[in-house]
Length: 251
Image (cartoon, rainbow, N blue to C red; front, side, top):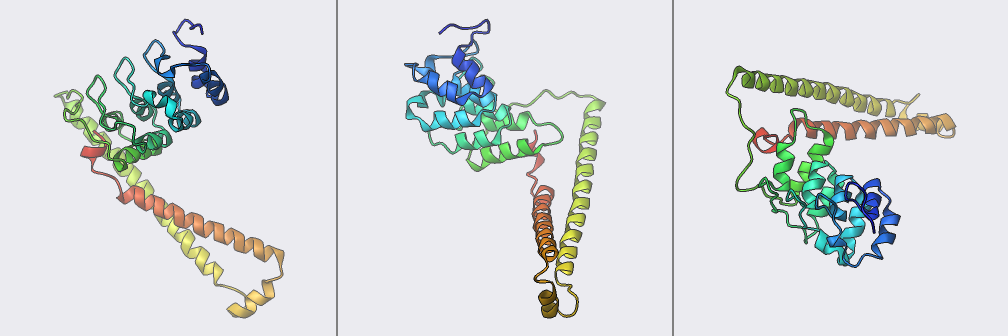
C-alpha cells in the first residue's frame, strides 16, 4: 500500500472517514495492523478514537487479533484512551475503560493519564459530553497521575478577575437550572391535576370519554408530557446537585 503526502495509508483514510466496512475489508490483507501507523505514530485504533468512529473502535476491540493496538502509544505517548478523551467521545471512552486489557493508568509524554487530560482540558463551562466522558473515566477507576500537571499561574489582577468571571458564570447556570426545575415541576403538577379531572366523577367521566379517539390522544399526550417533565426534573436536579468538587473536576 502506498502512503499519501501526510503519511497515511488507504486504511487510515477509511478509519478517518468512518468507512467501517472498507476498513474491515482492508484489514484482511494486513499481516500486522499494529505496525501500520501514520506519520504521528498512530495506529487504526488511535485514528478511530480521534475521529470518533465508535463502530470501528468496537470492531477492533472485539477481535483478539488487534489487541496489540489497545495500549500502543503515538509519538506524543498518547494511547487510544488518551485520544478518545481528547475527542470527548464518552461512548468510546466507556468502551475502552471497561475493557480489562486497557491500561487506565498509562501516562503520555506530558505525564498525564486520560483522567488528567479530561480535567486539564475543560473550560469554565462544562458540556454534557465532557461531563459524561469524565464520569466514564472515574466510574471505571481511572487514576490521576502522581505528578499532576498544573497550568502556569499568572500573578496578576487578571487571575482574580478570571475567578470572578467563572464564579459569575457558574451562578448564572445554576439560576437557569433552578428556573427550569420550577417549570418542569409545574408541568408535572398540572399533568397530574388534569389527569384526575373528568366531567362528573372519575368513574362516570372515564365511561363517557372512553370510546372517543380524541380522549385517547389526550391521555397519550398527557402521559408523554408527565414522563418528559419527570425525566427533565431528575436530570436537572442531578446537574444542580451532583457537581463534583471543582478541585477534582475542573482544574
